[in-house]
Image 1 (tube, rainbow, N blue to C red):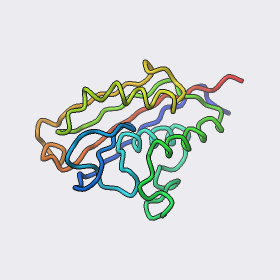
Image 2 (cartoon, rainbow, N blue to C red):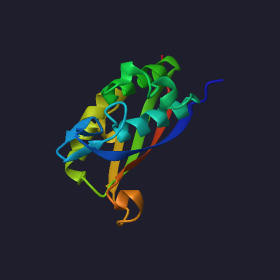
Image 3 (spheres, rainbow, N blue to C red):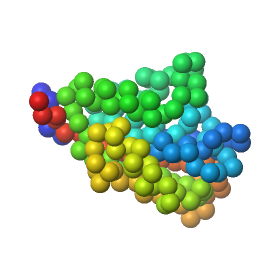
Image 4 (tube, rainbow, N blue to C red):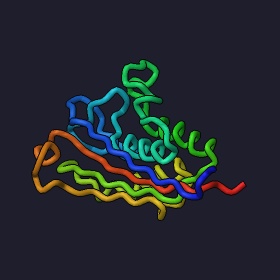
Length: 163
C-alpha cells in the first residue's frame, strides 16, 4: 500500500575549507571559505536529499552517491537532487513542501534565501512558497559557533502523485 503522505528528515554537516567555493542551496555565496566534501559539499542540498530519500524509506545519500566514487568528485549537488527527485517520481510521489534550517555563524544567509528558493523550486517541482529556508546561529556555541562549519536540518512532505 502506498500511503497518501510520507514525511522525511535529513541532517548534513560540512566543515569549512580554504580554497573551495561556498555553495549552499545551489547558490554560490561570496565567502572566503567553502565547505569540504567530495562533491561541491552543499550541505543544504545534501540534507534535503536525505529527507526525500528517508520519506521513501530508502538509504541515505551516501549509499546512492558514495564519497569515494570518482564520478561524484566536485559534482554540483543540484544534479544529485535531480536524481533523488527521479526516485521520488518513480515511487509515485510529489513534493508537497520542504522546510530547511541552516545553522551557520557565517556567512550571513538571509540575503541569499530568495535565490536558493528560486533554484530549488523547479528542481523539486513546487512553487517557491512551498519551500521554507531559515538560517540561525548557535549563539557562538559548538563547532558552528566557532565558525568551523555548517549544519543543516531538512524535512519534507511527499504526497501521492495524481495520475
